[in-house]
Length: 145
Image 1 (cartoon, rainbow, N blue to C red):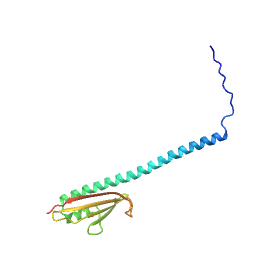
Image 2: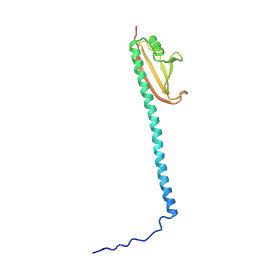
Image 3: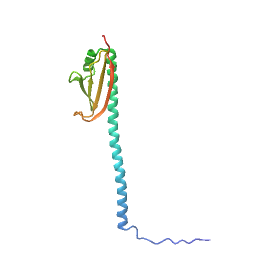
Image 4: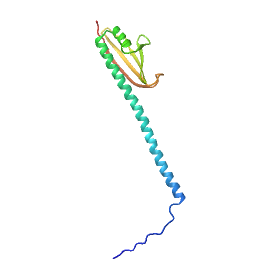
């Protein structure tokens, strides 16, 4: 048994309207995909800045903890200024820039037990309006040198 199939003899191709509709649909789909890629890249950049700022804050908080274990409050302030490069702005505020980040350290006077509050803010701009990380801790300072 032999099948004879006749193929349609249609040489017209696609009409101009069909082409325009298909290009429009493809364009809409591609534009929406590009939008998601762009938003993903922006989100990734913001996340990276926050992670870097948090890692920087954690590193400095560990340094301050070590200083508090080895020094009294007053000699610790000198270490923060001299060794860590922070500039003293007021009696309890210190500032420093490192790379693309600006750090603000707030160190409160210790209580009678030698415990003080320390806050570290990490900003990504000089205006200090774009906060990327913030940490707070309590430090027990050495009583005698």
